[in-house]
Image 1 (tube, rainbow, N blue to C red):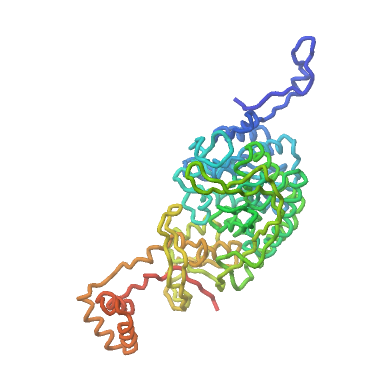
Image 2 (cartoon, one colour):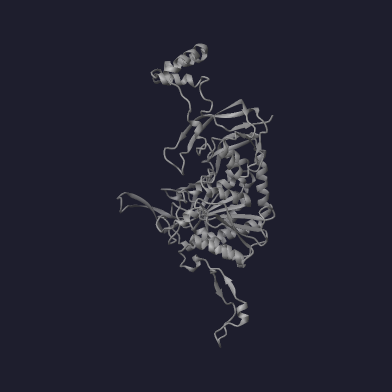
Length: 584
C-alpha cells in the first residue's frame, strides 16, 4: 500500500460533493513522512524509512535507491540519490557537485534521518529546485542494527524524539569510531559507497552532548590544518563562513561544536579533532570537504530536524554555485600531497593561535545538588548572553615522516591487503623472489590501554627505530606506490606512530609477543661463549651489572639481555612487518 496522501488540487463541486473526471486527472501524490504526521516529536522507524524511499524512488525517476553491501545486522545499506539526470557511478561526474549524507550512525540522534526524508521528497516533487549540476546522495540509516534496537530511555540527556534507536550497532560497536579500523561490515559497505561516489562534500548528521547554550545548530567541520593544502584553506576561509552567513540570513544562527565538558563555554573552548577513526576524518584522507552537523540535545526535536534540513539545503546551493572551485581545490590538494616529501602526523592543538566567537550562551551558575549534596554547575536560561569567546581551532603536526616511493606488504598480511583493496588503493605484485634494500621499523616503545575501547586495547606513545637493511621478498608480495590518490590513507594506516594507524588498533600485536624462549640452565653455556668472543658486548654487560642492582641479582634478566643480542633471538619480535622502499 503506497504511503501517500491524495490531495485534490482543484475545487470540489458543491452541488454533488464529488470530483469530476477533470479534477481526478489533476490529483497529485504527496509523500508525507512519519515525522510530519506526528506532533513534531517522532522519528521514523527503520521499516518506515525504507518503505518511504522505495515508494518515492518508484514514483520519481530522479530518485534512485540502491542496496550496497551488508551490515552487521545482516541487512544492506540503502543509498538514496537524487539527480535531474540519470546517474552512472562508473563515469566520473566531474561536471557535477557530489554531496553524500550519512544518517543514523547513532540512531538515537535521528534528526538527519527525518530531515533527509523530507529534503529528498522536496527535491523529487520540485518543491525545492536543485540545479542540474547536483548529485545529492544519502545513506538512509547507517547503523541498521542500532535502529532496529528501538527504545525511549538511553538518550538520557536528549529532548526527544519519543523513541529512537540505540547507539551501539548489532555487535555493539560505536560505528563513528570504526572508519579506519573497519571492524564492522558497515564500514566495509561505507567504503564501497564512498569510493563509488567520490563525494566533494560529506555531511554526517548528529546530535551534540555537553554544555547548554542558545544555539540549536552547531557544526564540526573537519579540522582545516589536518585537511591541509588548498582544500583545507577553502574550507576554513570560504565554505564555513558562507554556510554561517546563509544560515544567519534564515535566522538560524550556528556556532562551532561546543567541545566543553564540566566548564562554561564562555571560558573558551577548542575544536574537536576528527582523527581518521571518525567519518569526516576518514573522508578527509581523500580531500573531501567534510562536516558533522551537531544539533543541540536540549532543543525541541522539531527545531533540530528543520535546522538540519536547512543546513543540507544551503550546502546544496553552496556546492552548486561553487562546483568549479571545489573541484579545483580538491584536485590541487591531491597533487600537492603526491608531490610532498614529508607528511605530518599526530596533530595537536596550537595554543598560541585562536579565533574569537560572538558566542550566544547562558550564564553558568553553581547550585547544591538535591541528590548528592555537593556543588553542581548548571546553566540559567533566564540569563542569556552574547560574549567574545576564545575558540582554539588551529593544529600542528607534531611528527613528520619522509614519504617513500613504495611500501612493501608481505602477502601474509592479507587482512591489511584486503583493506587496501576495499579502499581502492593501487597495488603491484613483486614478480619474482628478490632482495631489496629497504627501511624497516623496530617498535622501540609503546603503551597499551588498560581498558577496552571499541573492541580493542589500542596502543599509544608509539616510538620506532628505523634501520636500513637488505631483505629477501617473495614473488607476489605487494608493492604500494605512494604517488596515488589514496596516499593519505596509506600513510595514516601504515606508519605505526600515526594517530589511527593499523599498529595502534592492534593489527600487528603478534609481533609484540616472543614465540621462542630459553631455559637459563641451557643457555648459560652459550651466553658464556658469546661474551668471551665479543669483548665490547661483555664490557657493556658488565657496566649494566655494576649500576643496576635488580639486573645484577636476576639470572634471567642477565641471560635474556645476552639472548636478545645473540643469533638465537627471533627476528620477528618487535620488528614491524611493513617496509619502505625507494627505487634509487
